[in-house]
Amino acid sequence: MRIDSSSTAAAILSLVGGPANVTSVACCMTRLRLGLADASRADEEALRALPGVLGLVVADGSCQVVLGPGAVTRVTADFEKLTASASPARAPASPSGAPGSIDGSGASSPTAGTASLADVLGARGAASRQARRAGASGASGLKNALRRLAGVFVPLIPALVGCGILAGVNGLLLNAGWLPGLTPALTAVASGFMALIAVFVGLNTAKEFGGTPILGGAVAAIVVHPGVAKVTAFGVHLAPGQGGVLGALAAALLATYVEKRCRGRFPDALDVLLTPALTVLVAGLGTLYGLMYAAGAVSSAIGTAANWLLATTGAFAGLVLGGLFLPLVMLGLHQALIPVHATLIEQQGYTVLLPVLAMAGAGQVGAALAVYVRLRHDASLRTTIRSALPAGLLGVGEPLIYGVSLPLGRPFLTACAGGAAGGAFVGFFAMLGDRVGATAIGPSGWALFPLLAGNRGPGETAAIYAGGLLTGYAVGFAATYAFGGVAAAAAAATPVRDPHRS
Image 1 (cartoon, rainbow, N blue to C red):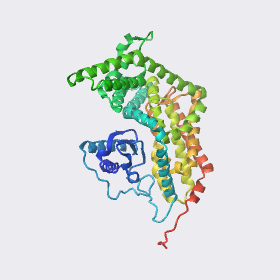
Image 2 (cartoon, helix red, strand yellow):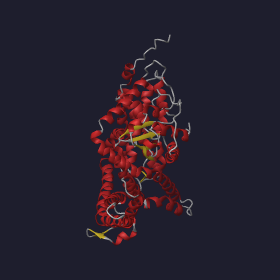
Image 3 (cartoon, rainbow, N blue to C red):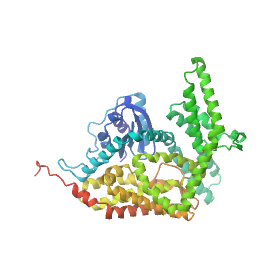
């Protein structure tokens, strides 16, 4: 069902404390990401009950509302209009999403006086999130750094996806020899963004870390300027693009630091002239005579390590990566991989890690299907799973994680086992020389098929990825059905009869 984006945006704005409580607005493929001045003012229960909300994560001064692909773009646009105009927004007096529904889809609210398994799981999921937030103070510095890192790269995902799909279509046309008059134009359209991605990384980095965005972009542009080929650093000539997105990130961070040090040190009449000039000069020279060389070495090491890991220990590496990715997502640590993916895409045209990590979502889907089959008597939980499965198949796993597998306990572990099996499948073929990659980050599950690339034909690449998904589904289902402890959890959630009902 297509949600009303304007009313959803208004409801979310009201439930997170109004425009005065919102410090930043951004979106990725599936989430509306909000910075909040006071996260405690967010009404989590009411937010989850909104129609169209698939999941919610509130932690470390941020609120992430999972809306799914497509819907998140429309809601974000309306949300930004509301915050820009500071118009008061009211939440619906009676949201159609039932408060008892785990995923806020409005389906199957338990009957009054009945403690269904869905109620128990919802309470456990909320308790799990609260416990993680309570114990996250020691890691708040790391999480804040990862949140800012995501703030740099997440806004780039739509362009990466769009250009990645066009690059895939152009590759098919070139291989088939079709439309030879159009393919040069498609090549330019698909490649233009990647050629200048360093500039966009610089803009976003300065913006995220409190600098002037255009100065961050100006310094990061040095990384891709052809003139750097005439510069010698550490005895070797630099190459345009050396260091890639990591070099641009470091350059913009240095520019932000220099700018902050310069601000306020000059009279107002000179500040407007000297601060930008010194920022570009000092940060630019630092980029040329240090950061580009160092970032280039790190970028090369990342590419070499990723290829070696899958080519040498592919099955084992896939097993470990696929099995651990769900816990990383749960803890928010998966954001640390974003610059790694971006570096691989910039170097090789695709990231070989994302298809392996995407298998975690397949294990999650298989586990949820097993819970659905085992608990035939629990209509509420089965409706919740039916509502969340389409999003899970497209790689949006939060509703299934927080509403089903994590609160149940064992199904979360068996979902990880399914992800490990799917990752091992894809990794095994990498050992045989068949690499499967993704030309963009963000999509997962079935949504990743249009973005697949590799060193073989598109048919073989898609077949390997599909085989990994099916393996993840099957192992996640079988492990959960046999060892998930679902029957015991159902028995523990004994319905309580309402004394007022006959």
